Length: 140
View 1 (spheres, rainbow, N blue to C red):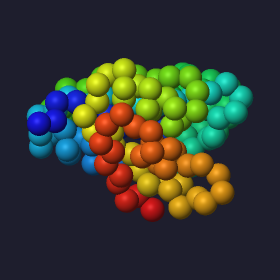
View 2 (cartoon, rainbow, N blue to C red):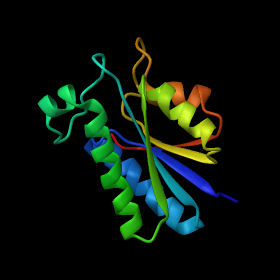
View 3 (tube, one colour):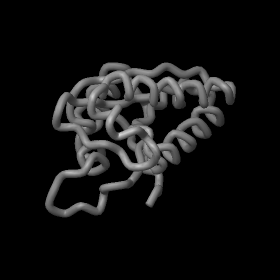
């Protein structure tokens, strides 16, 4: 039985698809949903899809919390118990660490970047190192 589902988001349109899938899964199983995000000082990646790039660069923590609050509210509006957590660092490392810390049963992520062959991608790193099952949403 699933009791805790988590989803990683950066506020991009593709991550929004993963959030939707996670909300649906949590709703169907009665699990609580944890929404995770990452930020990093100066070596962050600004997500595509409508976020204000200048604000993201100058206030990464604030921007991530705004994104997470929005996703949490989406879940709550659909009757899913949800909380949000952010961490400073590499996105894959943060997602893996938060999943472990919160004893997540399933971590939901989008597949964007999974086709990279030279550089590591968040989906590849999460799949290889997550302490739980990983549900990859086809977003691209």
